[in-house]
Amino acid sequence: MPSGSGSTGGSGGHGGSRGNGPLGSRKVTNMSSLTKDEISRRLDFTRVNIKANRYNIHQPPHQFQFFKSTFVVGSLKRHKMNIIKIWISIMIPIIVFFGFMIASRNDFIHSIEMDQAYYFNMIEEASPDQYMMADVTSYFEGDSGKYYVTYNIFKNGDKLWRNDGYTYSIYTKAEAMAVYVAGEIEIVVDELPLTANTDSINSDYMSYDITDDGTYIIAKFTRNIYLIIEGIAVIAIIGLSVYYARMLFSHHVSQYEKEQMHKRNTDPYAAEKTQYCLYCGSIISKDDERCPYCNAAKSYADYV
Image 1 (tube, rainbow, N blue to C red):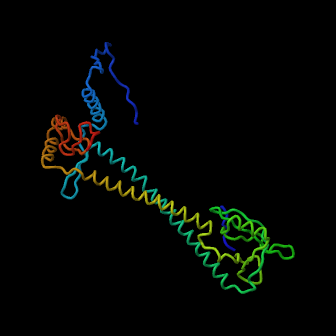
Image 2: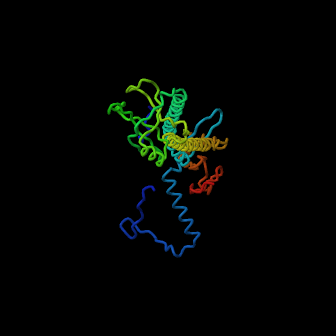
Image 3: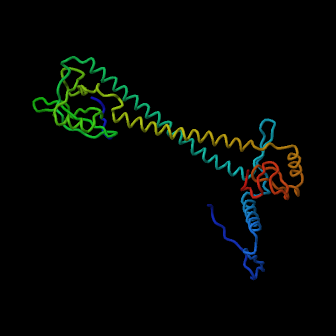
């Protein structure tokens, strides 16, 4: 008999100076006397210092060779790239997990299709003697709001099967109730004489399409959900990988920068005073308001 189809940011900083204390005095500016542009410049200056302290404007950028070309990555960009790597590492197990779930659902759907083909063939090849009436014992709600009916054959008051036979979840509630009220259902058995191992199926099974099977419906639905999640994860990891590679190879070291790097490596004083763009890693002048290579603002928050 068929398998049953039952419902089986960051931390805040605290700071400031104590005015007129033993540590010295500090002039306090009345912010209301400043123009909007002056306030904006002061806020930008504060933001620059926060960024510089966090990512160290004097920290040399990551430098690497790719074939005959030299590339550099600034500390701020490297920080962003590390975040991208974290997201990629999250996407990989998601893709593996849902790939496994999709394969599992596909196998289950295939088994339902094989069962249908088997029972269709059993019905088509059955002799008239293999058609018989069975007593309906109950009906239950299965998957996707469909219902299945349980039945048994009684001989001399004894059940043929210790556990009732059952249909697939192909009936609507009204259809299942009608079968239950009738009290009998026509079935087809796979062999005669009847034994406790005799397989059976309701004779009207061929009147229903596989898409009427509640178990098939829910299996297809969950498989499609897994496919959507898998697709999103794949697109995300491709996009993140492309973005990562673009950031990694975005700044090719110029001959001037190579000369400056050589000077930094041979002159400790120059190395100490060298400033780098936190985004692309280029050597910049302390007087530059924007990086001459990537156009990142000195605040490094306004990269364009």
